[in-house]
Every structure is written in structure tokens, then in C-alpha cells.
Image (cartoon, rainbow, N blue to C red; front, side, top):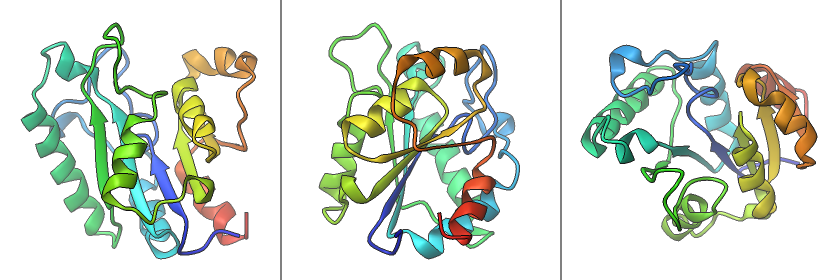
Length: 185
């Protein structure tokens, strides 16, 4: 039973906001919430102890945006969400390129471990990872979290389906998870 002792981890692109195929969401003008996301996060704010965003942002490593640009975008996202009574307790991002070794990108647990250092009450056995990629599912599984796939990354669905990763639930949109939780998922 999910209660105030649980933590919700959310990927950003494809879960909170629309992805830009072949590009990076690197400025507020390109950021567009996915359908009913602010309302969903507002609902989640009433039932989860912590809501944490974990996002791979290799656009920084490629020099296409700066950490300052990303931080400004995230501040604006949080401000917009707060207009709906929604909260985000922490945002953790990895600027590393996929090719850098080692790196902090999901599925590596670095961002979750950083969140747990900042919020010691986080228990991964009482956490849910919501993402749209195989690396998100691997990230959640490696830490013992429940995993929820948002099926927005259509180009990766076949790979996800054949990977054998444990996926506890699948939805098209985050608001569908909110509805299921209201009904007692």
C-alpha cells in the first residue's frame, strides 16, 4: 500500500514533458508538459513523501547547453508546477556523454544514491521509478524499486519488450498512473 513513506522517482523527457525527437529540450520555450502532468504531480504531492526527478542530460556533455541553462529550465518547471499545487523535492541530472566511463547516467544508480544522501528517509523498497526507456527500468530494478513504463518512446518499445526487464505497470500517460493510484493500485 502506497502511503506517505513512499518516494516517487520520475524521468523527465517523455514522462513530464514532451520529447523533441533528435534534439534536446534546453530552453523553456521548447518545454511542453505532457497531457495532464501538472495535475498528476499535484495528486502525487498529496500521497508521496518525496518526488524526485532523475534525468540524463548529455546535451550538457555535448556542449549544446550549460548547467545554468538546465537549472533555469528546471526552476521554471517547478514554478509552473507549483501553480497547480504540485511539488518536486529534488532534481538530479547527469551531464555525462553515453560514451564516458564511468558515468552517472541511468541505469547507473548514482542519481538515486545522491537523492538518498540528501533525503535519508528514502527507502528504495518503498519507491517507484516512472520512466519511458529501458535504462529507466534497469535503474529502478537495480535498486529494488517498483517500475512503471510510460510508453511514449515508441522507437524503444520493441527493445524494452524483449529485454526481459521487470516492468510492474505500463501506461501511455502519467495521469493514468494517478487514476490507478486513486483507485488503489
